[in-house]
Image (cartoon, rainbow, N blue to C red):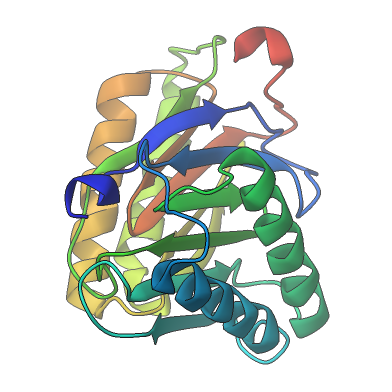
Length: 235
C-alpha cells in the first residue's frame, strides 16, 4: 500500500495565465497501482469523494478521512481558489472529481488541479504533513531580459511570498501580475517555507520567462506579463 501511494505525474496541459475558466485543466497525477473493485478501500473512497462534493458548497477547503486499517482507509481534500464564491467552488470541485475519474480510473491515489480548484485522495494519510515535492512546472517559451520586467517580476514574487499568512494572494507591479496559494491546513510558517521553495524553483527553472507556473504539493506560485497567454505550441 505504501508504494501505491506514490503519485506519478501523467498529464499537464498549458492553460492561459489570464482569463482562463475555473474548469481549465492544469495537471493530474495518478498512482500506478489500482484498487480492487468491491474492497473496503473502494467503499471508503466513494464515501470520501461524496463528502468532498457535499462540503464544497460551504467551504473553500476541507480534508477528510474515511475508514480505518491499512489498505482500507481513504484520505482526501479539496481546495478552491481564494477568490471563488461558494457556488463557483462547488461547481469546480464537481468538475474536478468527474475529470479525476476519467483521467485516473481505479487509481489507488490521485490528484487533479483545475484553474479554480484542486482535489486529491490517497490510501496513506498525507493531510497536514509537510511536502514540498514538485508536482508541476511550466515556463513560457517567450522570455525578456528587460530590467523593468525583471524588477516588476521580483517585486510581485516577493509580495506573494511575504503575504503567505493570507493563504491566497494576488499581486501586481508594473507590467507583471501574480497569484499564490497554500493549502488550507498549512500553518503560516509552513506556507512561507513552501512559497519560498516554489519561488526559488520557479526562478531557477524558468529564468527570464514572461510567464511561469510552479505547483508544489502544498502551494503554488504563478506570474505573467500583462496580456500574456500560454499557447499550445509552448506546452
